[in-house]
Length: 232
Length: 232
DNA sequence: TGCATTTTACTTGTCGACAAGAATTGACTG
DNA sequence: CAGTCAATTCTTGTCGACAAGTAAAATGCA
Image (cartoon, rainbow over all chains, first blue to last red; front, side, top):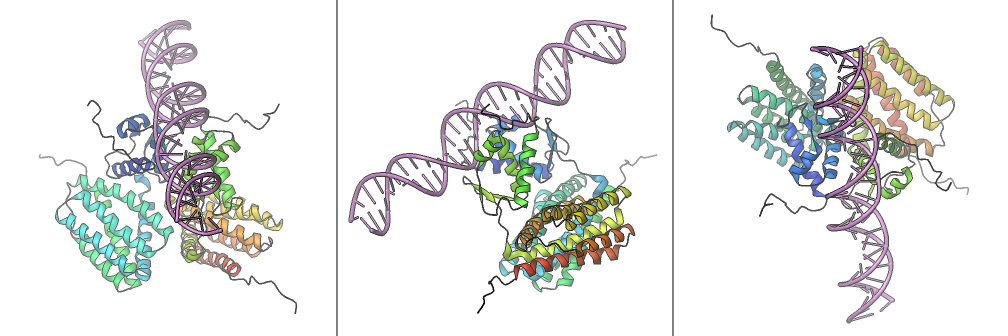
């Protein structure tokens, strides 16, 4: 059996989604580094399919800004724009506030169940010091809150921002050797309580505080002193 | 010459953009009605190209929510969700406020020039009672303000909202026989003045007022009495 | 005639191949 | 030896064709 590699007998429309999800995860987990080129034939060989579904997945990724494609030239993983991080922080703060506020107003019991489920996973990941799981479950936690707010316009923008933040956080924890902060767990619990109590103003303040906390950590990481200590 | 139809000798990567722009305009101008099916081969014949670039354009349109594609079944023009219009109005109001505020802070002289250019076209369209040109230039006017705010996250969401609004406004003016309101021209002038003066609070109020005005018109249209007057 | 089932027609998803454009290599000239 | 230009290679954009899956038409049966 020379060709024992996986030919998983996929269903008709599933190839594109598989490639899309896989590439997306690899980009957000920084396994594919920002700026690195993406070769279509290489991906086609790797996934065992033609270039057509690969291209479709890349077009979708480009639509979300995760890859950039120059005409007639190789497409590449989007760079992180460190010079304009303030626009990212600004939008992130607003979306944290708005989605949490709306969740307080429009949430239903099933939403709280989903939110608590992601929070449990988040707490477990923090305890296990599992950076990747912590980042992913943190994203899912806030995505579930946005869903509970029931405004697809905000949800779609927030998901994009959370994904971009996932790349930044990954960078952060790679550099700090994956020491995970416990205080986020308690902040999440406070947010859940405020949503449950339908306290809109409190949700607004907690959302802003949570965003500020994350921004402070990232900025602290970015402003850290790169020089190695020297013994004189 | 039986085949005298246009074979415009297009350049290599331009076919997709051409199809994308054309379909997008037709969708937003309601020439393609919401819910109507889109046939790939039909489009391929119409544009004189293969199905591949057509499909790529459709994938991009689907990424922006302008068309919906069911697996293994025909893709169709997205429906307007009248039942959840309040989420649209909510997001629109917030984006009007935020983008106008940011424009007051971050605009440069070139931005004002662009904004005034679109405003001039808008005023001319209103005077000429040209509904299509009025809707398009109104969109361009606010898009230019968002650009001056220099936050791509807000800009991208706002563009999506403005496009959705373009469909709603088109519906509105089709129904009201294209009588165009003059007061929008003055409101636009006020917004320009506030941005130029870098008055953030005033921009916030004017943005909200402008959004409320549009929402009121649309709601008035939606709540109108459909019954024909009957002479007894 | 009404309903279930098979058959047909049609649309989309995928493939392999070819052509156009760009980057790199190599040759040629000053 | 450096710089310019031509040739080659490599990647992407486009094409036509086939396969899979779905909806509609046609057939069979009660």
